[in-house]
Image (cartoon, rainbow, N blue to C red; front, side, top):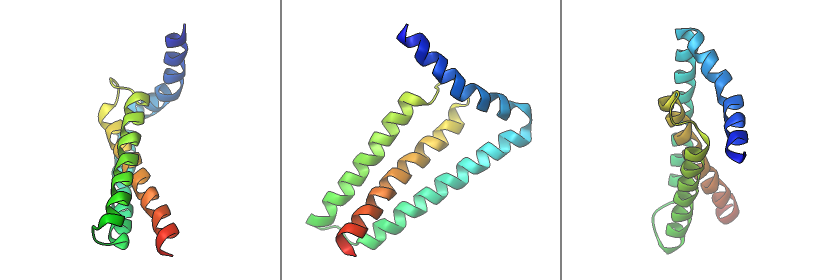
Amino acid sequence: MITKSISDIHNAIFSPLKFWAEQSTGNWNILIGVGFLLVMGSVIFAYVFYKKIGQDDERTNKIFLKSGSCMLLAIILCDMIFPKDDMWTIFFLFKYTLAFLAGGIYLAVQYKKDFL
């Protein structure tokens, strides 16, 4: 019963996206292009705050480890939510976009709290 309702929710969320992406190659390319731009933007965002926080020492190591933990948690949650069969490579992009964004947001919050 619970698995059926989870499957119904999963299909309601991801089936329209699959249908839209498979309508034309332009839609597929838009999805890949947006995913690639988002992952590059998230990586740059996390890197900028990594550099702003500074060199590794006993204080910043703790911040970087917690940022990595946020990234790991985002990857695990995305693995549980995103479908494994349809459009796996597209969701791979979005999974790592969310992971880098989560780590970058943690670094930005810590930077604002500790350094400003």
